[in-house]
Image 1: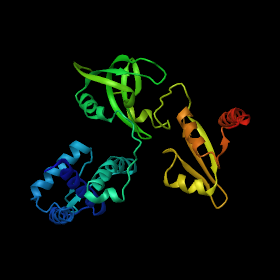
Image 2: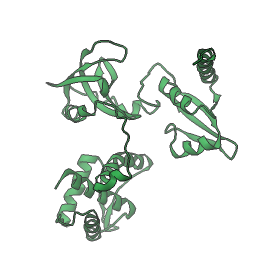
Image 3: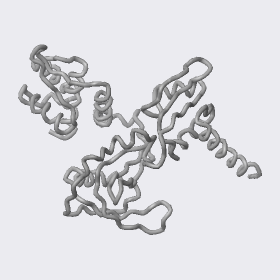
Image 4: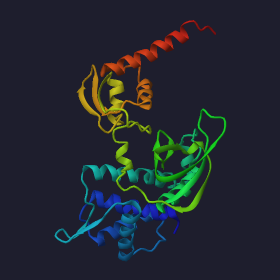
Amino acid sequence: MSKIGYIKRYLIIIRKIKRSPYISLKDLLQYVEEELAFHGLEHIDISTRTLQRDMKDIRLELGISIEYSRSNRGYYIPTDEEQESEIERVLEPFDILNSLNADNGLQAFVFPEHRKASGTEHLYGLIYAIKNKLKVEIRYKKYHEATASVYMIEPYALKECRGRWYLLGMKDVLKTFGLDRIEDFTILREHFRQDNALQVEKLFLESFGIILREDLPVEKVVLAFDRYDGAYLKSLPLHHSQKILIDNENEFVIELKLKITSDFIMELLSRSNSLWVIAPQSLREHIHGIFEKAENRNAGYNL
C-alpha cells in the first residue's frame, strides 16, 4: 500500500475513535472498511489484527495513544484540553494531504498557494538527523550577508511559522535557521547528546512567532478592534493566550500575555485599520512611531 493509503487509514481510525469513544474492534473494522471503499481503496484487505497494528503505529509515529477500556469494552483516546489541541495540530497536515490526494480532479476547484518558501527539500534529511541525534553542517546565507557561512549544528527540532520552515539547533545556544536560507547541508556521522532539560516547544509558548528573545519580559497586551476584525480574530486567535474581554457590535477587546517581538508587531500592523493598543503604553507609542515615520516618508512623494 502507498504511504497515502496508510495515512488515510490512520486518519479514519483516529477520527472515528475521537467521535465514538469506546467503539468495539468489530464496529471499528466495519467502519474502516466502509470508509476505505468510499475512498476507492476497497481492494485493501484489513483485519482486526491490522487495526491493532495500526493503533500501535499511530502511537509510535504520531504520538497519539489509543487505549482499550475493559469496563466500557471499547477503544478510546485519553485526552485533556492540552492533548486535544496537540492531536488536532498533528492531524491537520494529514487531513490536508488526505483531502488533496482524494481525487485527481481537485485542481479545478482547490487552489494551493503558489508563493512557496524554498528549503522544504531539506525537511526529510533534517528529520532523519534530529531523530538519530546526528550533527549537521549547514551552509547558511543570512539575508543581509553577501556570502554564506558554514555552521556545525546540533539539530533539535523543526518549526513552521507563517508558511516558512525553521531549523532549531544548538550552536552554543539554541538558534533558529530558516530552511530557505540553507544552501546545502551534510549529515555528519557524529552523534550529540541532547539537553533533555531544554523543552523546545515550551520556549515558544510566550512568543508570537519564531523569534526567541530570553531578554524580553512577558507582558500583558490589551488590544481593541472593530467587530469585523474581531470576527476574524475569534476564528484565528493571535496567540494561544488570547482571552476575550469585550465582544459586542461596537468593539472586540482581547488580552494577550506574551513577549513583544518584532514579528508580533508586524502582525499587529497587518490589522492596523481598526487596531487600538490599550496597553502597554510602550507598545502604543512604538506603533504610533512606525506610522509617523511612514507618513513622513510618503508625505512628499509624488508619482
